[in-house]
Image 1 (tube, rainbow, N blue to C red):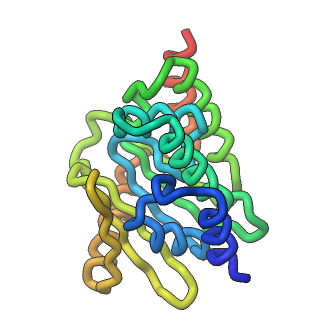
Image 2: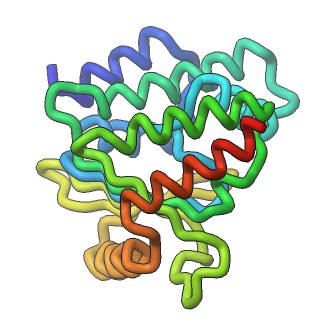
Length: 209
């Protein structure tokens, strides 16, 4: 069974449809087989890097009417996706975060400390690059919103954008090329990896006081 097939079988056996949004299942399968993922986030930590407590707090805020069981299914599905970063041959993962992601309080202060500790641990992985764009960065090229570029064998590269109601994968080459250009601009505007880790550590200390 392929890696993406194994993960989809896991989700099918463990989670109700409330765990993983129907429109996201194809994208999750692409993630599972990806050789490279590039992601820009404007507001909250991406699902691939969220701790359990952070994920639960974030999902609960967005779905206040859902039952506890539905929330737990969604949390477990999100955590299951993260297996790709610890597999034997993980994808290359480049992440650019706006400072707002670090500043938005999700859950308790302890939740944020734990999330930032987790982020710094992941930043040390050889296949992971995490960069921060601080507030006040001139010519910020990412204010139009979050997006993800996924490169998978047999599929080429896909760009994925999302709203509260749905998500849209695009494989039109001109669209992919445009987002790839923007991502390159974002990496150029962001702090390099080591200064980004120092930046994260400083904000972590603010939460821990």
